Each structure stands twice: as C-alpha cells, then as structure tokens.
Image (cartoon, rainbow, N blue to C red; front, top):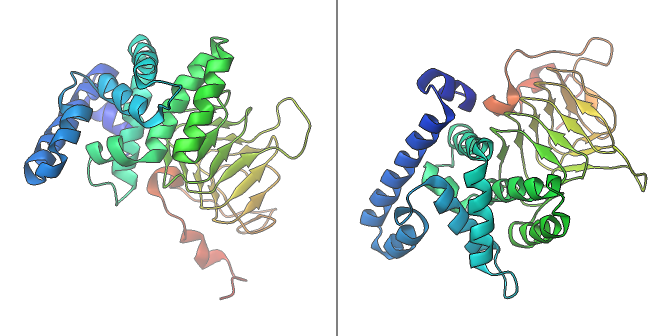
Length: 287
C-alpha cells in the first residue's frame, strides 16, 4: 500500500503515524540487538536510548555528517531543533521511511532504512539544509550540503524542493540542481541527474511531478516538466517535457507509442517501481 494511503487508512494524524512507525523501529532494534549482540551497543546509542524518532534521526545524522571542524554536538542540536520545530519535516521523514519499506524489497525493516539507507539519510539532511536556506542561513545550508555530498555521494542543492514519500534508491551519484522541484511519492534510482543546460541563471532545472519513476543513470536537463505518474527509463536523456502517465526511453528520449499518440499507463510508477512494462510496446527494441 502506498505510504500516503497507509497514513490515511490507519491514522487520523501525522503524529499518530509517526508514533506507530517509531514503535516499530524500537521493536525491530530490540530484536536485532538480541539476535546480534555485536550490534547491541550501536543499536542502543542510535535508537533505543532515544525517546523519539527526531532525536534518534538527529543523533545519527550528526554522527554521520560531523567532521573535525563541524562537531557532532553542533549538528545534533541543529537537526533536533529543526525537526522538533517543524512537524511537516517529521511527517516527510516518516513518509520516506514508508516509501523505502514498501517499494524496495531489499529494505527488511524501518530500522534498517533509518540506519543504513544513505538515500533516506541524505534526503532528511537536505530537508534541514533547505529549511536553513529559506531562513536565509545560507552559509550553514551550503556547509551542510557539502558534507552531505562528501559523506553520502548525493548532491542536492539546498534550494531544491522535495516532496514527501520520496525514495532515493541506492542514491549514489544523484545530482539535483538549485531550482529543481521533486513532487510526492517519487522514486529516483542511482546516478540520476536533474541538471541545467549551461551557464544561464534563473529557473533552469527540472520539475518532477507526483508519482514519477526515474530509472538509473537517467539525465534530465533544463527547466522541463516531467508530468505526474510519468516513467523515465534507465539511461535516458530527457531535454523536453514528458506528458503525464507516459514513458520516455532512450538517448535522446522518445515517448513509447510515439509523440502524437503516446501510450499511457494507469499505475503510479513512482510507487509500483515498474521499470519494464513498456517493453511489450517498444517494437524496435533490439537485444
């Protein structure tokens, strides 16, 4: 079930949803500590010693992103103050946890995602950097952006806007430019670039609609719109708008079914993670 549907079906508020997920995370951590004593101290310090998801996440991010000159205590306070003061950031983190748990068969638990998924961690740290950016604390936002890129190999400009229920699957090499916008329930694979086309300033990066799936090593350049529920095939290079519910494949990318009457799908690929259903209609595919 999609992350948004899970919340609407089971919980009357984001706070209840967050509390349920945090309860699951603690239970998973206790089970893992019992089955693997070598991890008991690690799991206690990162999860079991904390009273809330935002405290656990802030502690973990602070330790991941600290350096000899950017101390973990400073980062912990920064993350905790930001998450505690903005419920929408906590709701987005929970939606992202659910997205990974539901869409990625390799994600064995919520706690596994919280501790080990660098795409999830990079996204949550970016949310804090973005908050700093819009508060005009831009030197600190850019310093945090640099550490995220160094540690997680994910380069998201702090001005970029990202929705919730987002999955950065594997995440290595993802680049998201300054004026890019990513909608809700989007899934993005590794080595994806949402970039500009040159030295021009202004609004110059892609706008990704809700429910979009972007395959590994796809490149989308310029202020183009990827319509709601569209699918971008792995390795594709997209330079023009892609209509909603269509599939673009190739270099340069072409619409499956043709430009005049492109084939449309009914599912939401950002949630279904269906990368290959277009193959039956791609008549000139050659192996």
